[in-house]
Image (tube, rainbow, N blue to C red; front, side, top):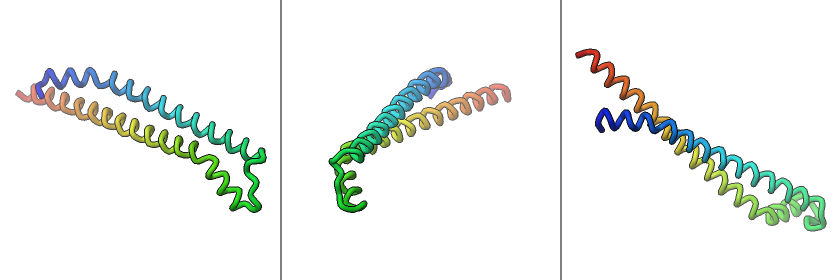
Amino acid sequence: MTRDDLITQLLALPERIEAQEEMLLADMSALADARAERALKEAILLLGPTIDGKNADARAAQLLRALADEDAEIRCREREVAHERVLLHRLENDFRSARALVALLASEGRDE
């Protein structure tokens, strides 16, 4: 990687980081929506005639089955958030590395 490549990368990274942050925020919002939807469905089920088990364990099992799709959606959204967070951290690390390299190159130029 040349000095110009490094400078180009350093200049491009803030925009890429911002775009990644926006993707992470969108996924976090989708996760919050999925959790809210699950909570609403759970409340409706608990107030309705669908969950009619004779004891707490039977009702919990019915509720678990009835909310299986919502729970799967939440797990999927959680994985997406985790993935976007990993990508964001990678870009932030790349930015820190590029800054350190530029500082190192600049200090080498002064030593000569």
